[in-house]
Image (cartoon, rainbow, N blue to C red; front, top):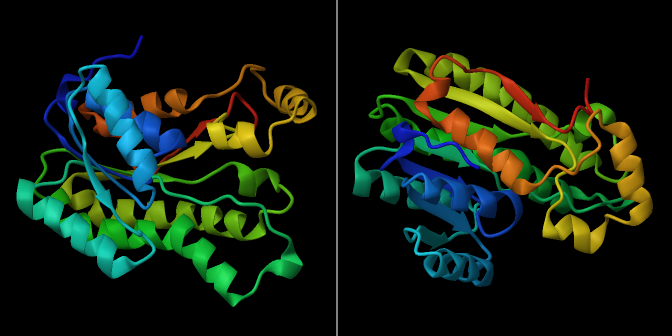
Length: 254
């Protein structure tokens, strides 16, 4: 059963990449907390399916913006529009990512830029454009997403690893810069999260056995497990936690 955080009720929450996977679970969980949720994604079909699921459960309808978050002008415009409409942004979650596998020899300038833009750069520009509205919150929280991938050194994800390692510096830097305004900045560091995408593309029985052997806790980690951590970090219960990296990987990375 999910904890109820009274401090999240009516809070303005923005989530990038909310149509699938971890993002979808976070939209669900924040809506259940009665937050006013906005999610940005290029996947309109997935977004509409999510909204339909929420309506069937008689839950509050979130607000969806079809947005290419790697177009930073477009991203900034959407965030500023949300900020102006509400006068404040309380929680910003930079979740959107692309962990598509790639070989070193296939990495050209375009692939490098594309992966950096979605896995790292969009977080910078999302935070930057949110600052005037985060300052107006009594307890603002920014949540970035890294990955244990770069720490354990996985194959065929070198650009993804480079971007996700840089999220640590981005988080530390913004936490120091924004702390005087009571804006918290933390990062969630997921392990192998069992999303629909992982099941479709990569998680074979052999790899699942290997996964369970790497973790201290052998059970699968699901998107809703990550979403519940995000609830805590977004709530006032975490009011004195900032510049931290919160692993959720079943004890894989020690």
